[in-house]
Length: 64
Image (cartoon, rainbow, N blue to C red; front, side):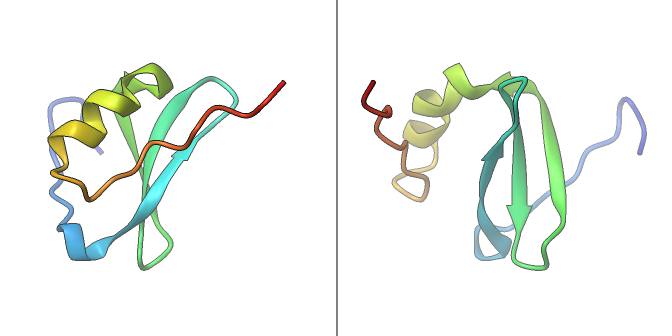
């Protein structure tokens, strides 16, 4: 991987999004690979969901 490189993932190949302990986001593909979204964090999920045109849901916060 390169710092300036890019990768395209088709919507059909997207299985979900994983958030790690550091609030970093990873695309999870249908093949089981993960691709880190280096600029986005968990706080960006609502914006990402809005840009996805309904393909990505934002989970409700866990009740305390």
